[in-house]
Amino acid sequence: MQRLTGAAALVVVEGVDQLRPEAAMFESMLEGWRLQQESRRLGSSIIAGRERLVRRFQSYTEAWPWAWQPQQLEAWVASGHWAHSTTRSYQGALGMFMAYLVDARYGWTSACEEAVGATPTQICHEWNTAAHVVDYEARPQRRPLSRVELQTFFDLADNRALAVAASGRKGGLAAFRDAALFKVVYAWGLRRRETAMLDVGDFSCNPAAPELGRLGVCHVRYAKASRGSPPKRRAVATVMPWAAEVLAQYLDEVRPLYPAAAGVVLWPTERGGRISPRHLDDRFAAYRLAAGLPQELSVHCLRHSYVSHLIEDGVDPLFVQQQVGHSYASTTAVYTTVGSDYKNKMLRAALSRAFDPHLGESGP
Image 1 (spheres, rainbow, N blue to C red):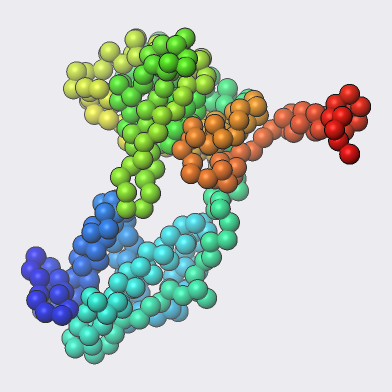
Image 2 (cartoon, rainbow, N blue to C red; image 1 turned 45 degrees about the vertical axis):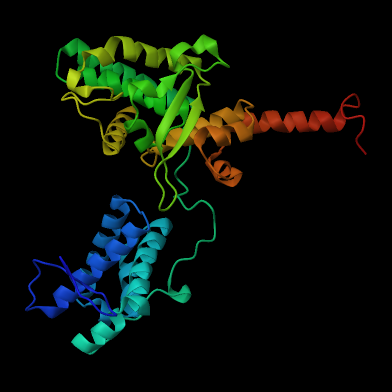
């Protein structure tokens, strides 16, 4: 890769056919934008995803960025039928790419005018992009599992592990691993990547709960990062002793059966690698289907279930917020969907305080 000197300081990518100046310039634009994002310390997966999106849009329009028009963006979005949050994400990425191109400090406007006789302009505006008007934009079908659904799912996972082991077929070790894994996702309120990246040493004693032994705290090292920052960390206190027993059994009886190449990985593959977040999605979907649960439920719904069930059990909302690593209480609130039994219990408690003369003597 070569860099041109001068005011524009544009990037020329090696390996691009310079006899096709439009394609060469497009590649140079993407390379320069990538460097800008790396300078902001954005993650490689975010940068790569944005580049793929820009290429998709270029393929759709069959035009180069200096010829893109707002109408093309609008037609592309209209043809996509994506979720609201996905649409905003796509429009945001394209808007940032165009903002980079029209920024005079990078020199692309003058370079395009000189090379192709046209200049790029912003195509994403307030009047043609999706607005962010609510805190929670996920599909309304995305919800916590009820306690009955949760038990059905766990029973299916346990029975599947026992059946595979009894048959002698390959996959018994993975089935026992996944049965424990999903219980850990729920019982510590974890995200997919947080779960996949756990090591054996990420659990330790909690002086405030010595009865839980070595599994009193889960130290999450790969929590969701803020933009441009490394993954956050948090310590999640164990609040479900039954789950600690499940994990202890896995650590004592199942985990040692994996090859030594697995090292300290908590959830290894049969070859000793680390499972991927995608594996959690795929295995959850298979178990959900076998258990006859609604199709809209995903593995992330186990995290929603953790929040909702703790709130139903009377756990302080601030403690729950800290457990799941939310910066704002409003984020935890949108995770919470309490059951009708809990609502009826709260209603009766409120009415009792209102009508019982022995309660709330200081009331009006």
